[in-house]
Amino acid sequence: MSQYEKLCQRIVDEGTWLSNERTGQKCLTVINAELEYDVENKSFPLVTTRKSYYKAAIAELLGYLRGYQSAAEFRSIGCNTWNANANENQAWLSNPNRQGEDDMGRVYGVQGRRWQKPDGSHLDQLAKVVDNLSQGIDDRGEIITFYNPGEFDLGCLRPCMHTHTFSLLNDDLYLTSYQRSCDVPLGLNFNQIQVYVFLALIAQITGKNPKKAYHKIVNAHIYENQFELMRDVQLKRQPFANPSLSLNPDIRSLKDLETWVTTDDFVLEGYEHHEVIAYPFSV
Image (cartoon, rainbow, N blue to C red):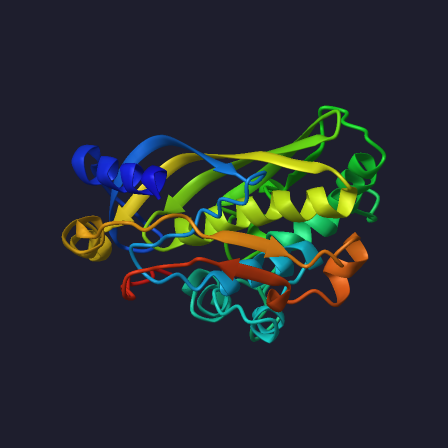
């Protein structure tokens, strides 16, 4: 929470107002933020100065790992975050590549599990990383990226948190995640959960020891219609201690993640929080 609060306060104190063409909103913006999560000691980076619906963030990550392409698939596992971008984003609605209601196109997990190769076949980036790490291999390229500029016109949204690099030091596993753009009041709450859980999951299914997760953000911002709630409400609240998160020890393989794992397989303990803050979401 201290890292989260410092970033929010930094944006309020030092940010520059910029116009955002996609949303039509102004954003108070800073460049370069770095956060660090202690996965080894189960210090779960969950926002406590407002209630966090952490299971939706985990569900979204599971959808990415499964390569979901439809908002309906995400809804089926408890995540509603793609409904608006799939069905209310005017640029996507008028895109001839859209395949009807709930289609998201080739975004996020589709790129991670089915990257299009020149010969028409697909590359499964996630399977390659899991296979290598399971064998104790780190080729300095244990990277999963969702950022494919050649296919931006085939999806409803460019990826925000776009690249994840795993690093293996003997049996100790680290993760560095890169994010080009971050809606701090809403998105960061999800993003930091996902970075933490991603390392915890991959460490468990590859038999490695989870250590630190490093989260690097280029453009961190607060939208104009969120600003007063952040400055006058959330930043006035005193944070509670970080809770802890435990994973079902029966999750042992990538196939498990693809088939039977649900948000009930993640158990949160010691979560104290303040009341909900209904931040507006900009499509």
